[in-house]
Length: 109
Image 1 (spheres, rainbow, N blue to C red):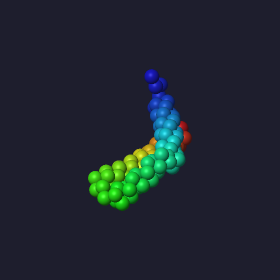
Image 2: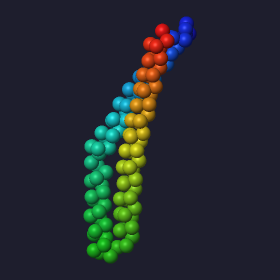
Image 3: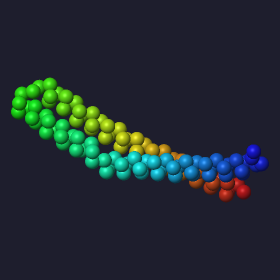
Image 4: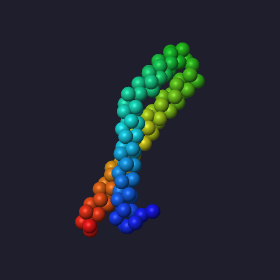
């Protein structure tokens, strides 16, 4: 399949570079979607109004459930952002590795 070590290293660097670009695009999409995702904020606002109504009408179960929903939405938001940031770092690592492979090819040949 590969006629020389140079071909193998060039193919590996190209694949890593393309994977880095794809992962970077996906991570940027995730982070932008998280920033634009106003639906979660709207649900959180409605839940807060529901909790206020529960407090004024002395409905303890309603307040507890609304609080649990707000905490779940907050955790969901943090998790999505964490995944996006992790993917950015993974993309940087892939692109850097591809760069150093190409750089070593230029020095040795």
